[in-house]
Image (cartoon, rainbow, N blue to C red; front, top):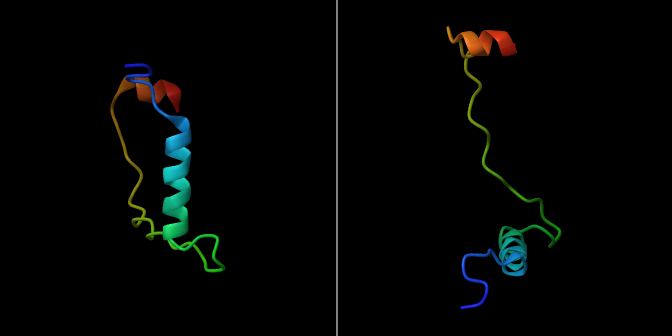
Length: 54
């Protein structure tokens, strides 16, 4: 069982490339992606570690 548990980078690259082509990228059309969710108010915290980092 050679290579068990090790990701196959070539297979992942082929899968990503095929997904991009299937999505319309590379055939002269714009690649469409879903819109980002609306931006909400900034998060607040009372964690002392977060205060020290900001």
